[in-house]
Length: 266
Image (cartoon, rainbow, N blue to C red; front, side, top):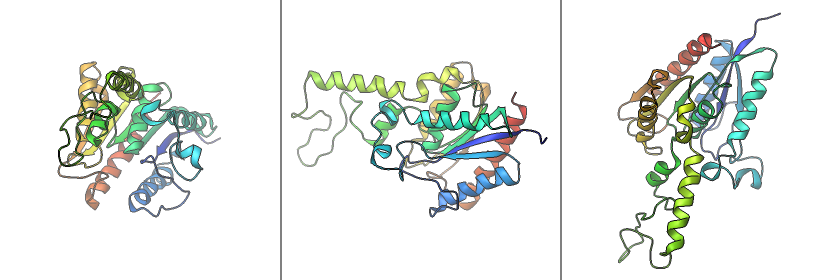
């Protein structure tokens, strides 16, 4: 019988995306599909791509998942189930399961490494959200802030809440949302990480704050886990990396890292 091979789980970004069993119409996801093919065909890995809740293509309730994202991270249950399925296949070595992804896929990678460290033995997080609270502030969302910034035009307050929302309920709701958002973030469980991690990001990212990647490294060092993380930073690069040479370098680094880390896993 053939020897069991390492397994790699890929999750798309968005999360309002859908992957196909063919080259994607989006150039970025076509490139990631090609990387999956390389991992499978050239490196001999078993690769599974999962379309998880809060993505598109499976109906309204699947897309509008009320317990997903910062409200409970329910979509991670689909990632966990996909990883368990991959590990259960007879041709896959269950002790050598890794995962990777870009943007929301990077968030899923971090979730896997901190929520199921015994299942996922290596991960590559490209431009990942690490903490929903800090990313919400980066996005200008107001649900986690006691005094969110507003810009509603002439004579609007510089900080909120505005007069129609100010009151004790605002503070209570903001604090409740903060707690829920934090518990739904990889940041809340970062001390559980015990697998090799590669973090990739451009420092001019216009979608996910570069400080998210900085936060991962700082949190791991603070927890005495800095030995588990490596970084690959692209100066002046944006979300998903704009230059072909940057995309190629990131893809090569991802493949090499997963191959080496999973070879060493047991």
